[in-house]
Figure 1 (cartoon, rainbow, N blue to C red):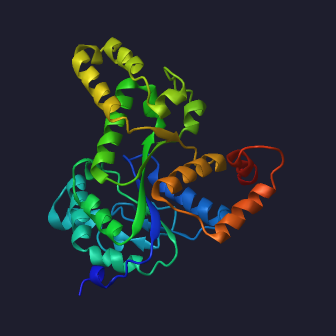
Figure 2: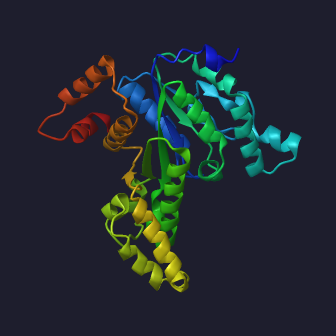
Figure 3: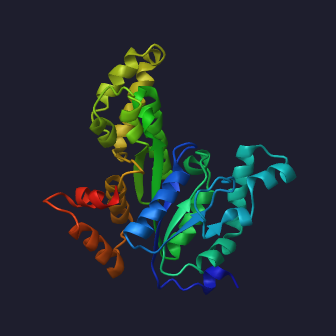
Length: 299
């Protein structure tokens, strides 16, 4: 009998699915969030690695897809390139969903962080990952997609428009509660990336007509004015994309993102976590906001 049929679905499970292009900082984020939730929030948390090419993990996953299948093995045995091998691995995981479910059944009362592959095709039109998490949703796994993109794309209008399209396409395809994140936001100031507008313009994604003017003046993009207008209009018509800037080295930033993710998937922390937060906040002095007070203890 399938594990799906034998699994009780009366309990509720919560977690986040960490996705984003290669180099956006997914694995680093998973490590930092795991430590933050566990040590600072007293939240029971586990990391699940579902990236079959993730050989440089800075954390120890509770579940690792590389025990089931790896990109390297698929490339050697099936004579596929890295992209084809990665898609094959996700299709193999979909076909062997019972393996994943059996592993998850051994995680009791823990918040789950899924570290995912970086190939964007898996989230824009490939079906396997979507189907895997749809099955988990039916088993009362309340998940939120955390989509990381590198914040330096804000410094280049064409790249930022591409980022908006990628985020919108991913939101429509994955069909999970969704939080878009501008990762490595601290590097914007450190490396003095020149932004044409204030950071709020890029996080709130409002008034893209101003960005359209920059596209129309660009040496390459100015010959595609109608296409530029159509793309900007599409993004604004859906009005779904916004971003939260993230500095993984800042407790304040991690706390603000945590609040947004918990709100998206309906997670309500337990009494142990509540006492932990209250104890940390009680150590702060002055009438600061919750995030600012927490940061005093964390940094």
